[in-house]
Length: 146
Image (cartoon, rainbow, N blue to C red; front, side, top):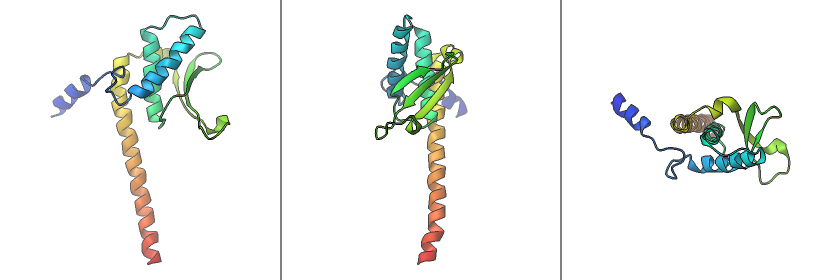
């Protein structure tokens, strides 16, 4: 059975595939990375896709629903994906995900596509645990009020 699961993981769709659950975040990151490429006089290439896919995975880990912008640190050692709060004008209301630029540029898209599956599963598990804890906290309070 484990061999079957490994086979499925190896054949998981690519983040570039519109049927992949992470495709929307990847496509948003990719658009912003392409803009950065143009801004820096670079031709978009496979390394650009690698960076976008790493940013998408990290954004998933951070619970982001979209990527509104991608920027680099002053020394370009880190790349940031940003989700702005549409109800606020301050940067303190942003969600940010970051990756080491060089490591991300060198991480194959296929590896990030597989990492997405794990990141999404970890997010679901954490959410389930939070929900369970809330239920357990609320149940004694409800019984005490009865």
